[in-house]
Amino acid sequence: SNKGATKCEGSDPTPGTDPFEDMVRRLRGAFNLGQTRPAAFRMAQLEGLGRFLRENKQLLHDGLFQDPQKSPFDSDTSEIILCQNEVDLAIKNLQTWMKDKPADTNLLTKLDCAFTRKEPFGLVLIISPWNYPVNLTLVPLVGAIAAGNCVILKPSEISKGTEKVLAEELPQYLDQNCFAVALGGPEETQKLLEHKFDYIFFTGSSRVGKIIMTAAAKHLTPVTLELGGKNPCYVDDNCDPQTVANRLAWFRYFNTGQTCVAPDYVLCSPETRERLVPALQNAITRFYGDDPQNSPNLGRIISEKHFKRLKGLLSCGRVAIGGQSDENNLYIAPTVLVDVQETDKVMQEEIFGPILPLMTVSSLDEAIDFINRQEKPLALYAFSNNSQVVKQVLDQTSSGNFGGNSGFLYMTLPGLPFGGVGKSGMGRYHGKFSFDTFSNHRACLISPSGLEKLNEIRYPPYSSQAQKL
Ligand code: NAD
Image 1 (cartoon, rainbow, N blue to C red):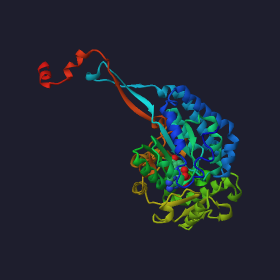
Image 2 (cartoon, rainbow, N blue to C red):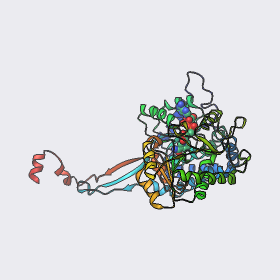
Image 3 (cartoon, protein in one colour):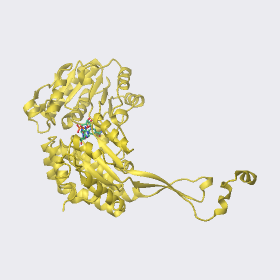
Image 4 (cartoon, rainbow, N blue to C red):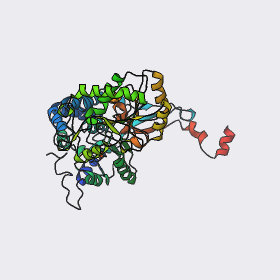
């Protein structure tokens, strides 16, 4: 029987009942029996996850096309391949990651064995958003499985296509006593959060992040929060405008701008702005054609609510490129805004769509001051031919991630810890960092049971100890 994710779990709660009670009890029971601890079990689940990705590639593509309207290229590069790479890396390194790590001893513990044991937390909850619904659900899952936890996944209810594939297909590849998919939106998620979890891993908005952390605090459950915000991008006068424009346009309009690490706004001098606008126009036309609405490489806005919000932002400053929209189609053209002020709405909230405001500053120092007056961002970008300028931005600011003359490709490297700081979140994952995130780092010291004579010196009465010394 399919006990993992069935449609009845969480999708149609009768008032007054708890739709997740059985699920939580089943998974906790399995964890308490030690089912997920052996390396062989973890390996088998990781292999199952790898098989899921390979055998359901078409279904995942269809699901991703249905909701965030991703092209197969975007789906492969930013979702499926990244998950597969994480699975492969975990399988390759699992034995090494699981090994106890010896620690140095001191005079008092010379004969003892000191080590860190990475043990699973127990029952983990992973809550994910709709914008990269496969990646942001399954990459954390890889770490949670590798670390030996039981896991409930709560994918976004908004990315319906992916939610369905995860709920109906994934459980067939995993042990259903240990892994389950919970369905639902805000209301169901809050019901789920009343249960005690041993770890909660949340990706989404800062607003909901606070709700998650408040619920976790009731049980003192540790959390990772992968949140969003406004990611600044400084463009120096010393640059090749077309190169910068190509890179900026790709990273800003990828996934129709609905990317947590996309450059959110540009800070540059008025002269650089004059050179950047035609270069951006050139890049946008080359990438998406004369009428981007017909481009197969540009998706749509996820919902009417977000469409309306983004349309409202188009009236900030002056439209230099794009600015068209079509409500029937939830289409917003790749847009560049100029003459934008700090107080404009477009500079106050995370844009999360295909709109790029250019705000002018008179110097690098002014740009750095501006950046440091805002909340600490998830990502920060700097473009310059002068490596000293890139270095100065890096040295004098703070952010979760940093790209110099680049966009968010750091995300594709499992050797780099991905995460936010301040309002953009807390905690790190990807590769071994995921394994460490989902493990309790247990400090262990084991003494020989004999050799008691050597301990005599430690014990009271201390006066006699002083005499011994
Ligand atoms: P969201 O915060 O609205 O939703 C995320 C998840 O929380 C969903 O599963 C949703 O069902 C659940 N949720 C929503 N409202 C809730 C509530 N009131 N109570 C309990 N649960 C609730 O985020 P979203 O709109 O799906 O995604 C966009 C946001 O996510 C952006 O802010 C973006 O920057 C951020 N994001 C961050 C990262 C990252 O890695 N740091 C990645 C992608 C997206």
